[in-house]
Image 1 (cartoon, helix red, strand yellow):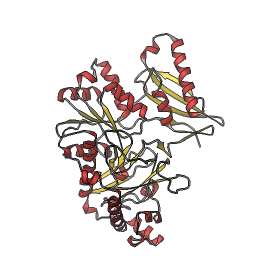
Image 2: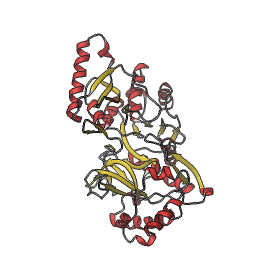
Image 3: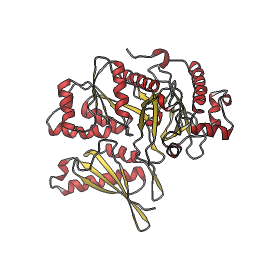
Image 4: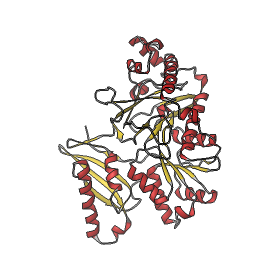
Length: 432
């Protein structure tokens, strides 16, 4: 059993009291690092600066550039001999950042993942197939250790090799998987090619989706194809990796574990806090990290706190599905566009396949937007009118959503290149 009832249903007053004590401990530990010791001295800050949780506002934000500029050891708060693990971000928005863990940090992280997976329904009797990359990427090892904490049988399949993934599912009666959403859709094509029905020929009942933002439409499409429940998870390497927030069976937002993280939502322009229910940028402070505590880390992820309590009885607040990142926003002809807006619309259109790619170009002084979309193979049977009608519909639907008329290229299924990690959604060929 891995139901931490005393923690997950703790009343708000007790939870805030715990957070305040942990915040003071965190600031004390952080002050031992090169970066924060210098910052605290410059700002005249220390543990005594904190009398309430609101006093976190006295401390400056930490961002990814700070981590990069103090590569590699500027943020560690313990002697290097006490560190047992290093993980790294993907580096998709610049130089990768590294995060260091003590043995206790790894234990805390594994317990959080076990809490998440148990909440979603996984048990000791399950067979868990981990289809994520292992190594510097946090996703693979995080879920692996969490599943072992529960006591499930773990198949460390790793990423890629789709036919082998399907064979493993069938041979070992896999009941739970961890998969990137875009890869889950790609895998459905391979199931069809092999003439295997994932609903009838496998035992999978739970999927944990992670590593890349995805829309509710994409989640529903995955659930419709496979017939299992697909749970959204949130994490980032700077906060451990996966296990920061997770959906309960009600699937109405993700519980963010406030015994381990202090949460703020700020206006990304004014940097001031916004009220619960208002969308803004997620800012997080670690509360239990020993090796590399981080204060007020700007995640760049856009979300909001869901104000009402959850029907499941857990008292830790919920965040809404991540809308996108402040640094993911595309500005085309004066319009602010997020890739997830395009994904949402595409998933609503019958005939659209499992992958798409946004290509930005500059022609003279004008920006152009092309969306390359995989569509069902039947549209390439020779009936050009059918293909043109679908293209026109996609253009119209996207224009209504993003207020820009895109060029749309329709391509055959599985023709857009795929990697083993996060799906590449945007290629920006514009020159500054």
